[in-house]
Image (cartoon, rainbow, N blue to C red; front, side):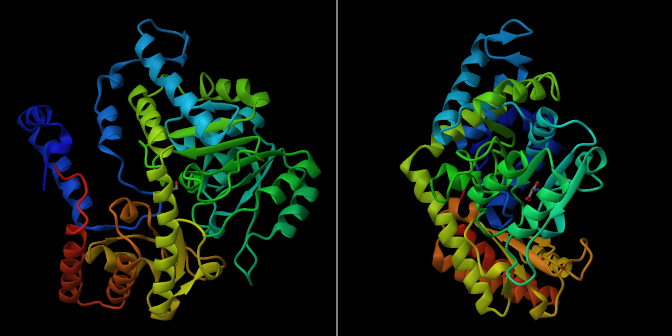
Length: 421
Ligand code: DSN
């Protein structure tokens, strides 16, 4: 294991000053290096991105936008934000980019604020069918402050029911229709959603947090030509720093910028803004485009191999970076599967499947994703091995067996080192 990733002398200083926290940094690095990271929303950023996050840009307050700040001394951070904006616009062919949201949820708060008022009706995908907390969950601001009507997937195909979506749009006349999800393995038909939005006069909002990295790598179709506004996170397949971003049509640029600052945030995290610029530059390379395609190839291979292990792929497979797996055939619920896999060094999450008879804290499924393992250089053969390791872990209650699987996991990950000197 290396501590080089923490930039030598500075890390030595931290170790002396704060041994407890420096120990956490080292053990988290070790955890990421040794275990299998299958959380669909996680990835390993480049060292270049990490370098920006540990930089002095973190010290600077920069409320406002480049050239129009409220504090002095912003001439250097302005350059970083201009670069991030221009790179985002160019990569996605967008009219406008706001690179300041601290997270995906922050970006979504700004979208609501730009286009709606509390009490307005919004149509979004239901959380139990794969949506997100900010798409109208009753425990989230979105469900508390807005009248969110939910659409879902068809029970027979487990694909979005566009007929239901259109019927609900006509019946409820929403101000805004949101597409995008956290556990939907298929592609969204943006053309159909645009047509429904036009029919009822709704803003088309795409929450592309999960799949925007695949769009950036030209591996799947882009929502940008269709949508009024696209929000997303920058740390999933996109492989940037933790944060959010919003793309919009020119007509909405001022409303989005006003909603982010001063509407929803104070000073942007300029180290993260610079990290976003670095990641966007990386995304524009042929190497990244190959990576994005490989992520999908690996997800399909993992999904097929898990089916071969007696599990069921929701919606019959995947077209993206993640698979949602109904594991009822194993006789184990999602919570237990998640725990057993964790004990075997396989990090994934329990996940509700559509029409799940189990509670959200238990679930009948697991969600697996391939952004991180693909960054490590794993391919189709490794996906088959991983499916077998998952299947054995889920089916075993014996701690000794799980410890044995963990050793196999470590043998596999040691062949695909991350952040080595
Ligand atoms: N937590 C993210 C995910 O795992 O999909 C969504 O916010």
